Image (tube, rainbow, N blue to C red; front, side):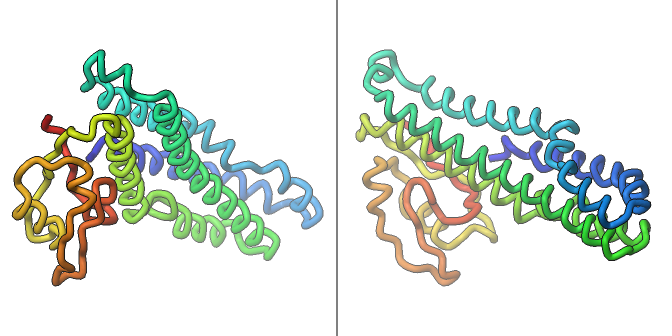
Length: 242
């Protein structure tokens, strides 16, 4: 799924703007005494600044994508089926979405705190403005912390798992629903996913999927069920066919 590709791209822009602003901030702070620095440290909030630069809008956009995914699955149901989905299931999905939003926001908050601490530590150590800026650009600039390729994979993986949890919860009252495994079968496809793609071409119910017994593959991969599929950052999906 590529629905959240914009998240890292937009977050990178926010990082760039924040680091660029620090030049003026650090120049001013470098003129303060240690006592003054300690006092003003309480007033510095880089997370608040990131919200001003657009993070609050960005996370709301992500939240809307999650809502859209829930709506997409519900839209597949007939009027009769809709009445059979419990309110508890709906609340559970909202809570799941909340967990993912908190995860993303908490990582940005942690980044903001570490950026602030590193800057203040360097100022107290009386490093030069250029030295401090260079350190912050290298360690906290675009591609670091919250915009690494690894973090992008984590964001995509979390959304893919959420999508499958939504399907599982919405259709748990309809155990006869069947799915087919879809996605690439190329040279980087895990052995476990390759096994499912090639050996189980017929539609399966969620119960059948979760009970699939697949041997441990040469690449040490093993199928992990409906939600986790082939494991971390799996590129495959269970698509409803009936």
